Length: 231
Image (cartoon, rainbow, N blue to C red; front, side, top):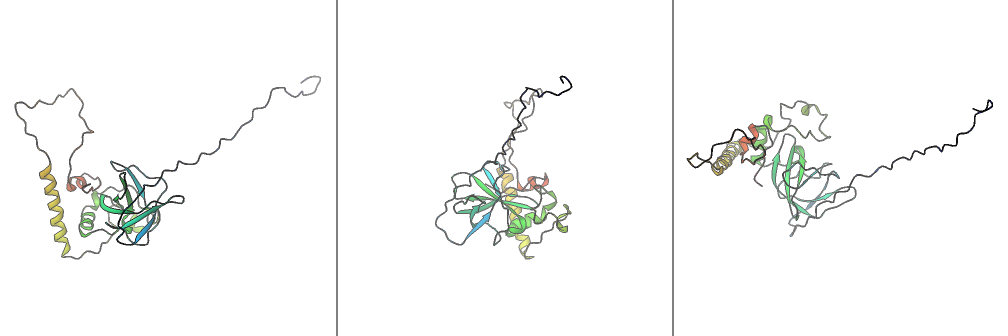
């Protein structure tokens, strides 16, 4: 203030520039190529960003309901709002959870898979039996698809909201097959016998918790982790 008047400051005003919003990265869909095409091809809407929930490769998640239930040997073509893959084939279910089934996809040079909500999946007799019997011990995450998350049957995580079309005479066969797979995996499990040349464990070192461990279907379900088929 000078002589009762305010003088304009000569200090330049700072200009605040708004940072431009960066678009999320575009992850390319897998290049699928399956020949020969022995049936109809289903176009599957998937989320634009996959997950890395499996041990190897990316897992694409179904976004909208497909025209038919998905099962092993189904020919699929993945699509987003900006991309479209080639044709691949759903192989086997590699991971089974309470509300999702993950299929491996053949026809790609890189390992990839597709996670599908259980209501949009056609499980085999063995897979249906395993899902029903071990449902309480299957992982409850990821949560159900948004199309089912708010429905009353899906609010109780202790009781299965699913009913599968299996005949009563199929259950003993499925149980026998599940037992056979479990016993075969246990027989393949390596057993080490302590001998005079075997070094004693060193208690001063930390245990290697990241070491791979061969497990069976029953072991996985009893421990509350997802059921994984043979890859």
